[in-house]
Amino acid sequence: MELIRLTPRDLALSASLVGLLALLSWLLHLGVGRRLLIAAGRSAVQLMLLGMILKTLFAQTSLPLLGLMTLVMLAVAGYEVMARQQRRFRGLWGYGLGTTSMFLSSFTITLMALTLVVQVEPWYQPQYLIPLLGMLLGNTMSGVAIALDNLTRTAWEQRSRIEARLILGHTWQQAISSIRRDALRSGLIPIINAMTTAGIVALPGMMTGQILAGSPPMEAAKYQLMILLLIAAGSGLGSMAAVWGGSRRLFDERERLRLDRIAERRP
Image 1 (cartoon, helix red, strand yellow):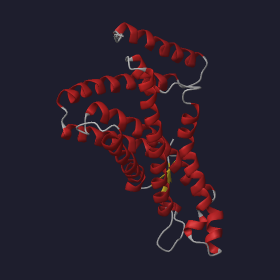
Image 2 (cartoon, helix red, strand yellow):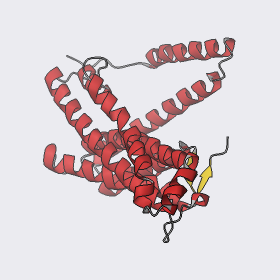
Image 3 (cartoon, one colour):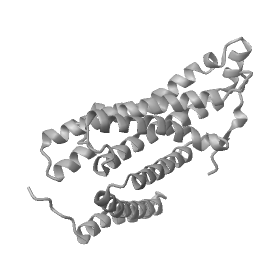
Image 4 (cartoon, helix red, strand yellow):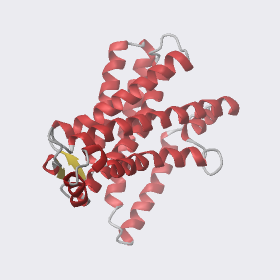
C-alpha cells in the first residue's frame, strides 16, 4: 500500500481544530488558550526542524553529528526534568541529577537494544538510533521528573518526621525509606499504566505510525512491544538512580537532613 503524503492543507485543517479549542478556552475563561497555541506552535516548529535534520542525517549517517544531536536531546530532557519539579535541588545538582540518571539508563538501554536486540549495522544507523533514544528519553524523563518531585516535596512536608527518626538513632536510609519507596512507585506508574492498557484501551504511537506507513501489523506490534519493555526498564532504572542520588543529597556527611539544598520553584 502506497504511503499517503500529507499536504500543508491537511496540516492546516488539523491546526484549525486546535484553534477552535483555544477559542473555546477563551470563551470559557479556562486560561489555557494561549499556552495551547504556544505549545502547538512549538511542536510544529520543532517537528519540522527535526524532519529536516533527520533528512540530512539519514543521507550521510555521520557519527559526530548523531552524537551532537543525542547530547542536545539529553540536555533538553535534563532541563525539562528540572523545570517540572516544584522543589528542586540547588545548583548543578538540580540539573545534573536528572540528566545523569537519564544518561545512565536511556543511553545504555538504547545501545543494548541496537547491538543485541535489533542488531542493526552499523549500530548508529539514525533510522533506528534517533527514534529509539527519543522514545526512551521522553518516557524516562517523565518518570524521573515525577519521582524526584515526589521525593523532594514529600521530604519537605515530612521533615519533622524524618528528623524525629534521626534523633531516635535511625540511619538516613531508614529515616527516608518510605518516602523513597513512594517516590519510586510514582515514577513507575505512568509506564505501568501504558503497558496495562496497550492494545486494549489505546493503540500505542509507534505501532500506529508504522501501520500508517504501511508496515505489517504483526511486525508493528512486535516493535511496539519491544519499545514498551525498553521504556519500562529505562524509566525504572532512571527513577531508581535519580531517587537514590537525590535522597543521599538530602543528607550531609553527618547524616543530618539538609533541606537548604532544595529550592521551591518560582511561579
